[in-house]
Image (cartoon, rainbow, N blue to C red; front, side, top):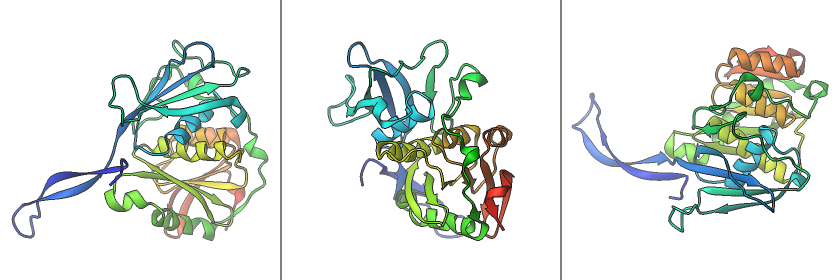
Length: 280
């Protein structure tokens, strides 16, 4: 079935139907990914370990490095290679080795940052709120894009229709990049909502398309602080979510000059920041 999903035996119980039955069920896969970062000369130690759904590993690693402020452009990365760890079977690739260009400072690991991200938390291990609040090189407040509210209401169904692995498992988050006219540009899925965004951003970074001004980022879950941060770092001025935002997400969106939409369901939505970009 591919590494993004796998089959497991379950006992199906239906209190309103027949007796319990044993059958196979399709689950979303979750495996660790270690990201090693350094220069051509010298060691490339592990910077982060994240629990993710296999697939798009290079996009995930590069998107993570960009949204954490380690790199800002494709030229900052000489090579990014998927490889097997020393203790892993030769056919299991759960390590991305990234070689930075000579002009890029090494990431400040250790006392300032100690990255270990789970599938539910994108900022676990950060030493302080100051370390989390990485400043974006992009002035998203200057993005003049506007989005028709009716167009926004169409995006969740378009995102859902493009979620291939979710269709089989029901267990993945999705991040979709749309034009202001509602055209789906790219989509990524993962058990971690922050991983889905990193995969999406990393793909656009590798294609040389950043900053992503004039686009809408739609996430299938809630709008947390780390997702708002990642959108800002990618130069995205409009972030929409089908669920609720957090207080820090709203505060950061207002600080950055972003538009933040929550509870985008059916014909309704709540605009928590930047309402001038949403045209009723």
